[in-house]
Image (cartoon, rainbow, N blue to C red; front, side, top):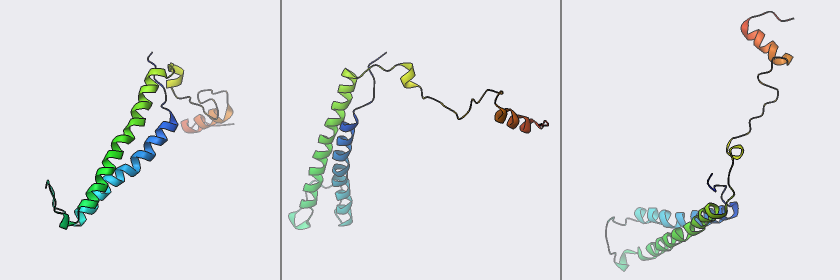
Length: 122
């Protein structure tokens, strides 16, 4: 078996709370720039156009988006390197029912099956 396990939840939360605002700062600002009338696929913009500040904010968001992947990559590396080995019991879900599903000695199960078959019950 390979050393695979659950990722560290604290690092996952750190990754989320760094990624979410960085994503919004990167792409929501680009949406606002489009609403302001910024033409697409242009390399340079004049300072008089008024897009410089929002572009700078979007660039900061993109940098933070890149930085936010570092806790995730560290989390994956640490789990792969030091994570405990999972067994078959860890991988399979535990299924529990209120009553034994396949045991006809329980009257409720037997009565329900008799009713489905159309047999008479006592």
